[in-house]
Image (cartoon, rainbow, N blue to C red; front, side, top):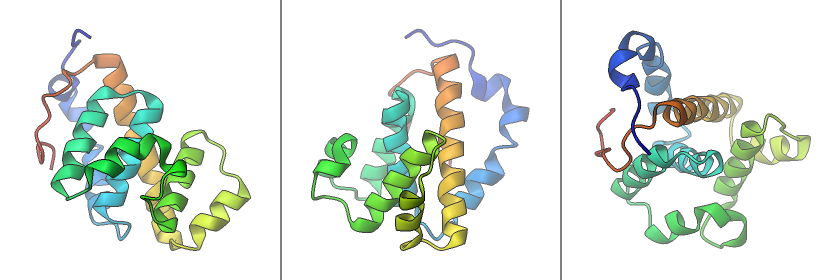
Length: 150
């Protein structure tokens, strides 16, 4: 796809309003690796190539095994994810669809505090916003370097 306007340059003032959310999530007790895993999964669901490239690179830098990255889109059918991670992925997919059934909420609440559930939900909202910005403006996929937006 041909890149459109560079929203990170022309929208700097507006984008600065998002940085505190990223800063909050970076300190979340949920943990960067799990939050990035969720971002990668939702970027698969939402079809955001730029975010897939970015989160795959970030996860590899954090030591995430390649096998988990390759099978993330089929996480329900693999033995590579813990029960806690499965709960978080199911919760994130449900939040992404705007329908969180009681059974998914209750299963996730077994592993996460109320504060962490809020952070998981904020993470879903944040990646959705970035996915949508990238769908509109088509940043050049493959150009992200680890830590570029830290």
